[in-house]
Length: 300
Image 1 (cartoon, rainbow, N blue to C red):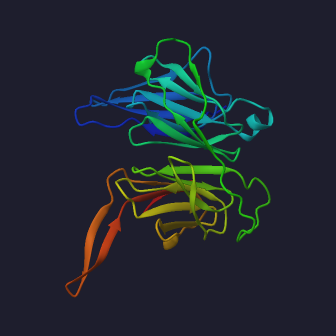
Image 2: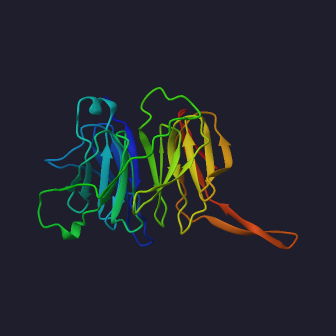
Image 3: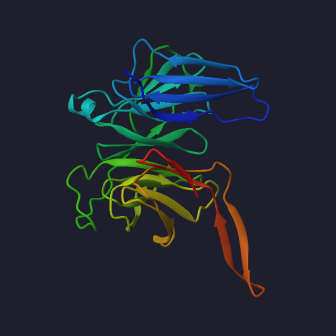
């Protein structure tokens, strides 16, 4: 049977680097590594550990620990029904070994985001929780046995009784996270609400209402003090929100439901705006990419 790619990540590129490395999460629970050299030579390997593995698809990957480690996580409805493991695994990329196992989620792990320094990260799950973890440094490892790690913080988003659309079930599922460079955390889930949190305390700070179906993705621009955040939804819209005012600034209508959104890695372009010689504000621009149920990817 065919093996499907369910997630992808890329190591940071450096001008003098001889190779570029990509990671693929697969629906059979494996992680594949691709290395592309400057001369075009291609090599691959599978990350394998004799003790630890994923029982279901790998739906999210994340680089941490000064890019020395890769986090892999995932799950499936079938795995949840059978009581399978939903651990997050940390791979030491130098030795291709699992050096830490982050245990706590009780259902499919959907998304992970890390701090700018790569020393801690958040994960969200179908169990309705967001968990904060301290990354185990590979340079501090003293044993070949993987260390079990518990979360340092567990967030449970508030339950909103009245929503603008009907949810048949699974309203607690959380599907996507975004974390700004200065530590503002956002979550998106099946209840159609975007939430903002204090990443230090876990306090829920704001709700953003407007979508008419479940949210599938959230993305925030890089740089200090971002002014806006984007969400994608099954209602076939991408919204641009004002972070401070909790208002929709722009709506992008799509032909089919949105499965993911991502922003270009380069910083947001900021341009001063003048009307009749008078400064009126700033024009913020960034490149947005979106995936859809019709198997297309679009740029805006």
